[in-house]
Amino acid sequence: MHLTESMRDFILHWGEMGTKWGVNRSVAQIHALLHISPEPMTADEICETLGLARSNVSTGLKELQGWKLIKASRSLGDRRDHFHSIRDMFDLTKAVVEGRREREYAPTLAALRIVAQEAQNDGTSPKVRQRIDETLETMQMFDDWYVDVNRLPRRVQLAIVKLGGRIARLLPKGQGDKSP
Image (cartoon, rainbow, N blue to C red):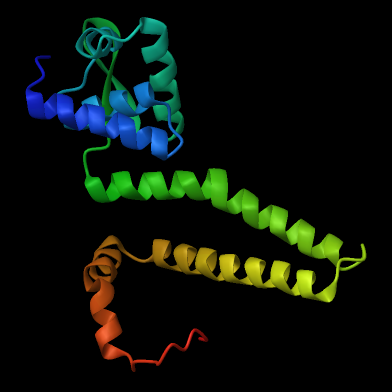
């Protein structure tokens, strides 16, 4: 595949952002290429286009499949896998958020539950226990909200996202009040 300047810039920027998100630069670049590619690509085509080693591409493709960001398909008469990214941006964003929730947020909640329980009996001061409990409660509240919203039909989720900050105009304005 021939890359134009804007395609190269997109792939390079996606790679840079990947490193900030904790993803290997090559993995993010592979995803960027598959995301903008109009047709599925083989691992060899990815290697050639990005100038990456075959082993690096194979590892990256497995990682992206683990994140459920890409899928492999086959063509009649061709033994090679052809890879493509999730095409729908809403579905792609949901896959990223769900993957991060499973890998980062949910384990943190589980650890906080254990820590909060331990703190009840190990001599942790009441002020520290209160801070741990507050952290757990707040994180659990956001996770419960996410789970509830995730159950809604897509059209409702889109309406909520589009509503965005406009909802703030409907609510009474507080004067620095941070309480619910």
